[in-house]
Length: 172
Image (tube, rainbow, N blue to C red; front, side, top):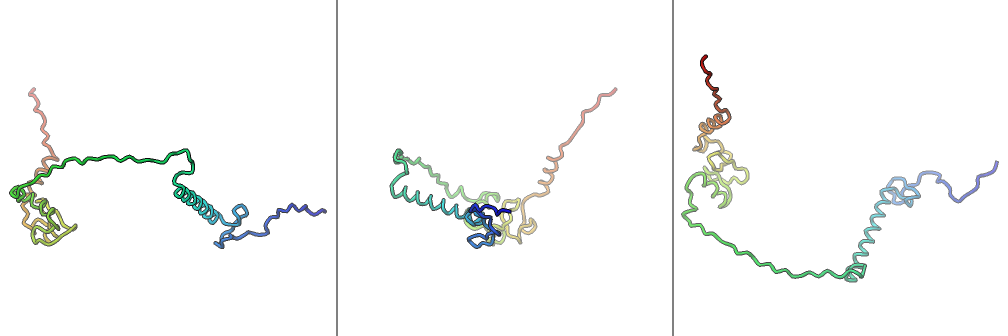
């Protein structure tokens, strides 16, 4: 029997480890690197090429093609619109009802309990009477609430259940 001809291409005797010693197997198609290391190497080369062309563009003062002209920006004049300021007299800002009192207190500074004036911040509880209370005064019986819960419940039930009245039948 004749010996096979040597073509110069020999199959590897065993699997080849990645050149970067990452623990995976490489192949001759990826320069003896695993697929992950090969992709990272290609991305680094592309990034280096992009950085080099960017630096050339900055140094040369424009794009790589000479046919394009540099961009020129025009100055645009912007005139501000007149602003009207309204001055509210001190009498108008005074609290006329309990509904407005909690709104002005929230705008003035830190939010405080309407009963004990303790700072409540974001943990305050808004009551139906319109005030803000701490955890101790959040219930209506603890802060002498003026809101009529009984009338509100009656109205809610009346709105949810309208009266249905049938027409009278004629006598035969």
